[in-house]
Length: 241
Ligand code: ADE
Image (cartoon, rainbow, N blue to C red; front, side, top):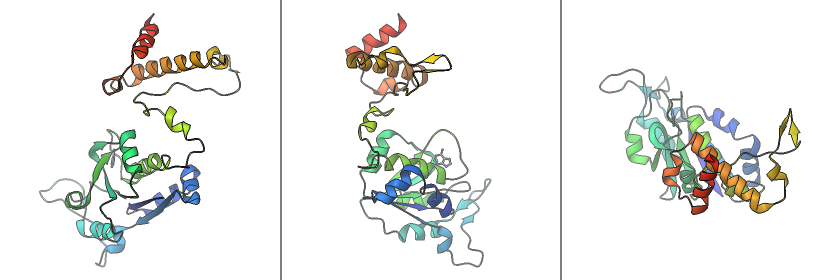
């Protein structure tokens, strides 16, 4: 069982999102529990202030330390808890990191807002500071939900068919091949013959070749970190002929 908590100024936003589709099923089956705490609940002033101006000047507001720290403390993180800060300056989220987080018993996602969070929260609490891509969102809730989704589907029993994990894009470092279901022809577009041939060797070659083709077209950078076999090199060569 995995417990995921969100530290967020918008708890309804994340708790509503986990009440649908696979995340809701994961919750119902007991594979994952979700919770959320709001730093605003841990303020003591009349205006329930959670933000302040940055030292040194600059535009926008920062989330203050005390309410965020008190919200994290209320969850009693221990040495096995991953405390993940969402931040566009973080390390990129990858399938490998999803696997690492999925092996923890507890994850706390700390969702930034405004121009970010006072950096002492990162120093004092974060085990990971993670970005979901080279773009800037208005808050950390969507990045946290993206990561929670990727981690939830890796929990045992959450996907109906665990083989799905093996054919995922990124599972072996490459993007996966295109897939088709019925009908065999749609608006003049036919399903590739080989997929209907029943020839498992030919299907496997076709899928690997497509995987290499899509990766070369969309994400050639992935070739740098994946080990291509002699068969792959041959299949790639066949793409050009
Ligand atoms: N907060 C704002 N933009 C973000 C991003 N790209 N990744 C993670 N957290 C963010």
